[in-house]
Length: 172
Image (cartoon, rainbow, N blue to C red; front, side, top):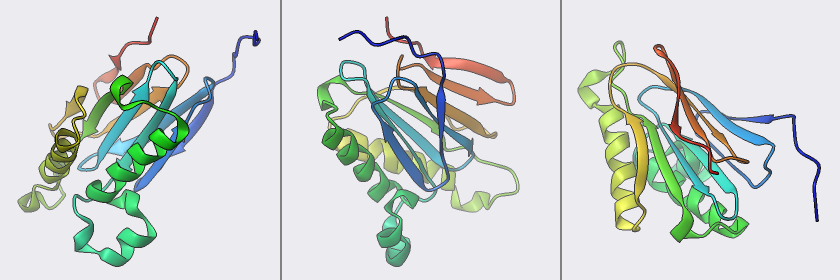
């Protein structure tokens, strides 16, 4: 069945402590202000299904009540939510292209806690334990990032104070 070309992009904002999934080629998932927070995108280029998670804190045990009401606030519960939602939508683990962004050390934040580093560590640990390879990333440093995933093409774009670039090119 032939579909007319899609010309309008539907931007879906992924807020802080939020996660969105899409299989619509006209959708673009976008999150803003990844400082110490970590953004994880996962995209299945075969089935054209993608998701984006923006989590704030590494461990749900720090506040079980908040974790129960919003598991996407925490890396250990949000990452599971992201991948379970992708698999339920039809994504295949073997096809996934996974990227990370954020985990910075922002001046003015409580640098003694190394929150950005701890968020990156939990993300990497959970992905590694589940046999999921990180294909690309823009992490660490000392400034914010915005991250967007184009569902139709798989292109992953990062915007920083220095400009915008493709972290993952569109699929052919």
